[in-house]
Image (cartoon, rainbow, N blue to C red; front, top):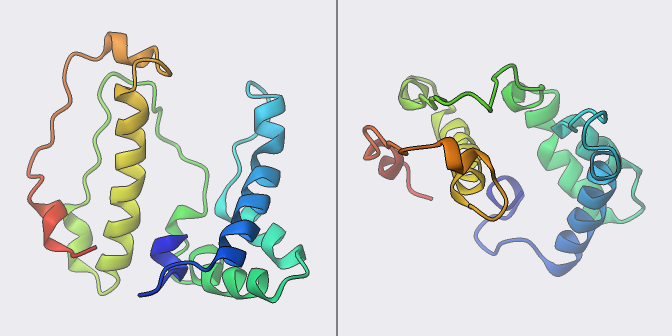
Length: 147
């Protein structure tokens, strides 16, 4: 959310609190039933933000709208990638061809970073034991778009 809404001053404390509340609510079912509950998507967070009484929640929901129902809704879907595969490739170089490349590549980098953090954290991931290497081919592309 910091990338989407934060701006130069970042998120304000009330915005952080609203996001914290809604995130906990969005993931409540997954935490209670991790094997059967569907993983939430951005639409679920957007819907919860719209249900909150705070004006900040409405502002956050409005900022998310382009990613939920607008032209950048590519991340508002459940993945079709089997993340338990031994080889998972994040190819984001081609995103640079599009006018919205900065928005897509920053979000994609965050997703890839989160995946790698979970993968290499041995205390929380059994996948790490099966992983023999992490390769960052052409990682200089990650440095082209300033954060």
